[in-house]
Length: 307
Image (cartoon, helix red, strand yellow):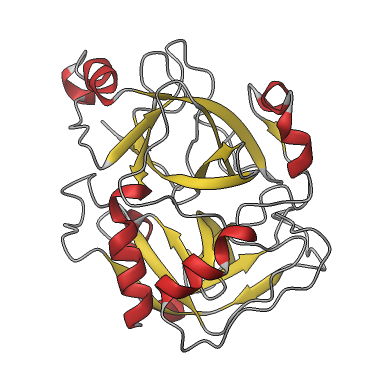
């Protein structure tokens, strides 16, 4: 019935983060807002930026520097391969979708950190980008109320890296929203990843992105209630985005990746969604379903501070 979606460049200046024993709230308040959500091209988004990516197309290197690829061995003899996306939200922490790590969906999936590799600064998925950074995770943390395969409401996971990553022109953090802050209905936001470019296709070799409008949850519930097998409960912890006519969406192998919305006031991209699920890919009448990040900001901050 459902598809499971397996789916900043800062200005060229050096900036320093405070000692790592500061609590996350202090870091967020005092340091992150001025640097997060920026990329090499952010000045170009002030005008007609949205027209460039409607319909989905290839991104430029460094355009979404918070985007990471989560890689796993799908069998014992295979190399590490891209499976899901993730978003860098702090120099040692990423956020992704919980279902990427649950073996209820596939036998090789696991929440064991040593089974995974994380790449940041990646653009060409099958080429050895000289500038990418590969690290091992040390922790994968689910929301305590997550029930594997039972609910969409808490499809969220935090990933701690083995060490802090250096932030630069191709690796940066996305901004977090405030708790319960949500993008307005019809606001155009961007999702990016290496997922299928058509529903039954192959993964993309390079990062692609698409612009999608935010929908009211009531409308989303009505759309998914049309046929029995597509019924999903769209709660306030979910955000829907997409087009009535379809054609533009995240797809398989995009799961866990970001949906960011541009804050023109601060010239920053804010992480409002985590690619979660949907019915097919870009089918008419079935928008994409994303975990609403603002519903979990307090949990995110608390968890990072405690770990």
